[in-house]
Amino acid sequence: MTPKELIVIPSDGDSGMSDSVSNIFAKAPYFTFVEVIDGRKDQVTVEENESSGLSQGTGPIVMKSFKDRGVDVVLASEVGPGARTLMDMSGIRLFKVEPGTRVSKAFKQYVDSQTKQSWS
Image (cartoon, rainbow, N blue to C red):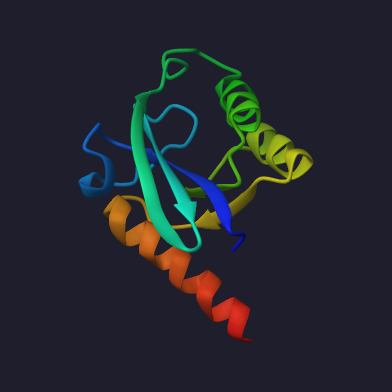
């Protein structure tokens, strides 16, 4: 984990950390953005996914907006091949979590995994 990271989680609602991780990525109704400074949650914002209604090409559009915003990590269950390619090209990391998991739990799983990695 770097000193400052921006994490995004596709979520089913607009309740932030108390919401659940969506089972879909690019067409999730909302995205929860978590700014992390020195391994601690700093700011949490939730934004409606304006691209969720598109019939196709949603993954690459969402990934471009994440890249432009400076996202470092996506916490999601799965991402499509187009989104995954752009994710890899942009250096955005994917941390897989189970859909339906509370956003706060998914965030804790990620932070815990990074703490363990730094000690191994």
